[in-house]
Structures are given as C-alpha cells and as structure tokens.
Image 1 (tube, rainbow, N blue to C red):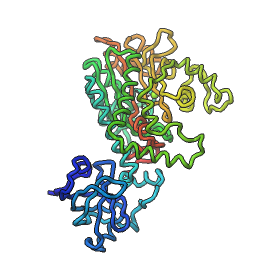
Image 2 (image 1 turned 120 degrees about the vertical axis):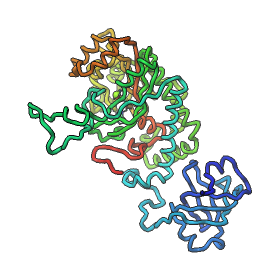
Image 3 (image 1 turned 45 degrees about the vertical axis):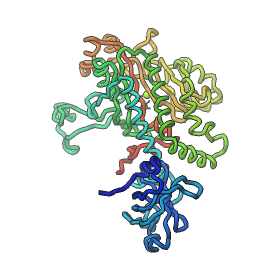
Image 4 (image 1 turned 90 degrees about the horizontal axis):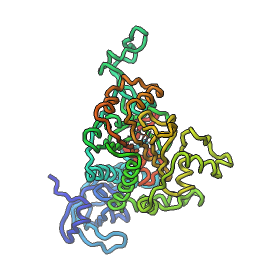
Length: 477
Ligand code: 4AD
Ligand code: MG
C-alpha cells in the first residue's frame, strides 16, 4: 500500500514539519531545484525543493515536464514568493519517465485544435484540468439542486423507439446486416426482424419518458447523454451531449421559467463558491488570450465579473412577438447585416438571439410564446391559436442554453398537433394515455449541460468542455 497524501489534503491540513509522501506529475522544473507538482486533487501545484547534490544528477535530469514522480520529504512553510508551502525532498523516485524528445505536448501554449487530437494528454494541461474539475462540480450541483428541492432522478432510456423532438436527426441502433438487410413486401428494410422487433435510435431527449414519471412522482429530472445526428459544425453543437431535463406536474410556463432561472443561477453560484482557484485561472487565461484581439472584439466583462453579474441580476423576460419587434428596430436589421431574415413565424437564429442578449439587454433573456409551427408537437397551444407556451433561455456568448415548454395536456389538441406534425398518434398511444387517465397540467425544460459548462468556463468551443467530443467526422478515442 502506498502511504501517500494528496496535495489537496496537505494544503488543507498543513502538517508543518511532518514527513510526507506525495505522488504526481511535474508541471515545471526550474533551476534544477524547484519542481511544481500536481496530482489532480487540487487546482494548484505544490512546490518541491530538491537539493541537486543530494539527489543524483541522473535523476534530476530525467525529471522532465510531465514525468510522474514520488517525493518524500518534510512539509514546510515556504520562504519563497509565489507559494505558501513546499516540501523539502529527501528522496525523489521516478514512477513514469517522460521522453521529452517524443512527448507531443511541449511546455508552451498549445492550440485547442491540436490538443483535441491528443485527448489522452490534453487533460493534463492546466486549462483542461480546470475545465474538467469544473464540469464535475456543475454535474454535482445539478444533483444537489434537484435533490434539495424534492425532485427524483430518473434514468431515461438511451435506446428508444420514439423521436421526442420530431426532428428526425437520430442515430439508428440496429443489428441488421448493412449489406443484406431483410426486406419486407415493399422492398424496404424490415425492422420487425431487428433486435427489438422495430426500428430504434439513440435518444434525442428523455422528455417523453420524463413526463411518464412526473405524472407519478410529481417532480423528476433526467441527466444523461443525448444524441443528435445534425450536421452542425459549430462551436455550440455536439453529436453526443448531456442534457438535464426536469419535468414537473402542476407547473405552468411561468413556474417553469422561474425554475429555469433559479437553476442556472444555482449552478453558476455553486462553481463560484467551490472552484475559485480554477475560475481565477480560466479568467486570467481569457484575459491573456484577448490581448491579441482588437478592443471591440474583447469581452465587456471578465469571466468572473460576468458570472457574478448573471447570478445577481434578474433575467429579462419577453415574448417572441416582442423579440421580433425589437429585432426589426435594430441597427443590424436596418442595415441588412443579419444573415437570416427576421419575420414573424420564422425561428430566431443564433445571430438574433445573440443580438437580444449581448446588444439589446446585456443580460440573459427568456423568450416565450413562439409560433406553433416552429416548435415541437407537445408544446401547449396558447389561446391565440397561433403560439405555444414554449420558452428558450438565451445566454451571452452562447445563445440558447435551455429550451422548454408547458406540455399540451388536452388529448384532442395534442392529437391534432401530432397529425399536423406528421406523427402517427397510434404510434404514441402511451403518450396519449397520460392525457386520458389522470392527465395533469405539467411543464419541463432541457438544459444543454455542455453549453452551461462552456458559459461558466469561458471556453470558446463546446468541444473543449467534454472529455471526448463527438462531432461530424470525429469519434476518436
Ligand atoms: O431545445 P432542445 O432541443 O429541447 C429538448 O430536447 C426538449 N425535449 C427539452 C425539454 O423540454 N425537456 O434541447 C435542449 C437544450 C438546448 O437548449 C441546448 O442547450 C442543448 O439542449 N442542445 C445541444 N447542446 C449541444 N449540442 C447540440 N447538438 C445540442 N442540441 C441541443
Ligand atoms: Mg431548442
């Protein structure tokens, strides 16, 4: 058994004068004397002071960047500037050599694109260690938020026979031979011969199953992977991403928006409180990165300032009608600078959402009551017969982080909407049963987990907040 102590525990308990053993990776080695060691347990590094005379020169030379070492020595207050504590090493043992000649990561700034190709090493960089510690904290905070409010965690299935969003951008799950699939009388692939006896896909959303549970347990949330085969090569889209979907009986659209706002603020406040060192590092990183940008391209607020700002201010709430009116009055609209048209009945594009959030209000914005034709069949029809009780939460730099709605609980209205959306009601009999037998008003939404982590960490590309990104043409590792 290794008798070692984690760096986080040393920094917390501060056993001054005691002999301790630490294990970790070298982040820097200066003047043949000072090692900055990290072991992942804490955002910071621990300084190790080695006596070049006492520690064999051969070993000293091999303690390169990212080598893995074991150090035994006494834990001390540090006299030097820059760190509070250090270990005066008695022995240093190499656990894993690092051949600097061949190691792909040099101790210098790397591009994010390059690091993505080295996903097995990128996590060792300070930036990605910070991002993935924060990702963990956000996931933990998700569970804490809902657990503390009496919600139950529901595991929705990953393989499903239904298309919740009706968008048809699904990955097929099949055991049929791609070369010689069985065919039916019409010459089409006969999925009744497939593993599940029907066509199945990876889920695009756990919502429909969430509704089953909400109408039994009252308040539930799902938190799982979601898959979308949309060919979107943008800094905001992944083919495999994680979504949190709360679903609540007896919540209307206003209750739903209140929960969404409280949830976003809670996650951000949690990270501000628990990950201060990592956030400070990422804040500094962004400031460095922005130095090379022209002033008008820089962020108005630093990362920390922006997070504080979102936590401490009410989100703006407007209707889709108001959003369209604002956009039509906007400078970029009048000057023809938007790429996509603005017109009642069309969906808002990222550029429009960002205008509302970043230019008009400079705050997160919740837009509600969208035209029925651009939203999913399950959203509740408003009395105007033109809009549905949908809501999107829009964030600066990101655009849509949450999409949700009050659900259509009236059977006849729902059937009508299904038919108009090309969904066969008989294929979703179970979903209609929820309206037939003890139906209840209910609402819910989906938060894109990576988009929230992206906002909190300030990372420019969503691929850099998920350990192993899956995007069109890319499923390495
Ligand atoms: O707006 P969406 O499609 O909503 C639903 O799936 C509903 N069933 C949710 C519900 O009401 N229970 O997706 C929800 C959120 C989006 O707001 C966005 O943040 C994120 O999921 N999202 C993606 N994130 C990364 N990559 C993608 N391709 C994403 N597509 C959606
Ligand atoms: Mg959406």
